[in-house]
Image 1 (tube, rainbow, N blue to C red):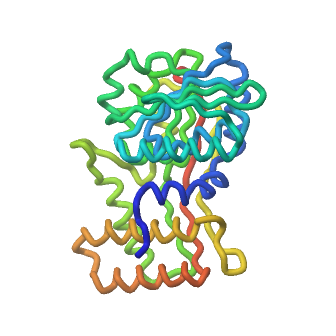
Image 2: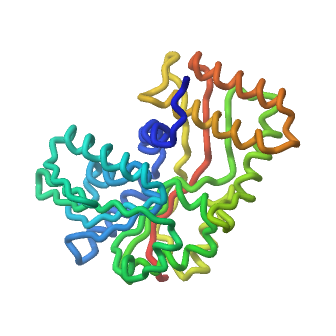
Length: 304
């Protein structure tokens, strides 16, 4: 039985995200962070998941001193993030100090991070403006495509100080591709993408299958500037029949997610979906399936 828990999926996709995150956008972010006057960066990450962005910011030498808040609605996932980050820090040889809701990470060259784990729904959290009014950096990784960006974006940007920066990564942009192709691909993906556009979470619209391209206009309307943007496509394939790291599980989970969603749509014949899913899983097991998802990354400032 395959473990389709969300935490396992997030762990499996880390190497996929590592490749996908746009490095030109990262380098512009690095430059802009260096220009900020505050040596300790106050960072807010929404939909933080396992906390893999903490690891990237440290491993990629983007921030040495940080007061970092991980916000996620899932308390169990946040508990998993704490364990994941402790394990990562130990493997890197960093010093760890654990308190109730805070993890202190110290290391070479003056590395000093305080990481806070906050459980809460995004809108409720943003309503407590005193908690978020002074962030130097706002991060959303693979998250904005599951919220109503047009309504939440102004509140998100209000979390930043005038010289603050946003870094929005892995924003889905309308293309899901499997190779080799299958006769049902077009029909299934059309319904799957439409389900993103119709998604509702916590009683509000929560999704857009073309979040990436729409962010350009939504950021402009919110008065924000775009300093850098670029593609951050997921591209997963097997080399000599073997996928990298845990990426076979990542693709299995994508197929599983599509299956679970499309089972809810009566216009999709159950036998047709079952055949497609079975064939795709078998192709992963044989190291034959290529999976590609088109996405976009952005960094910029809350004002133009």
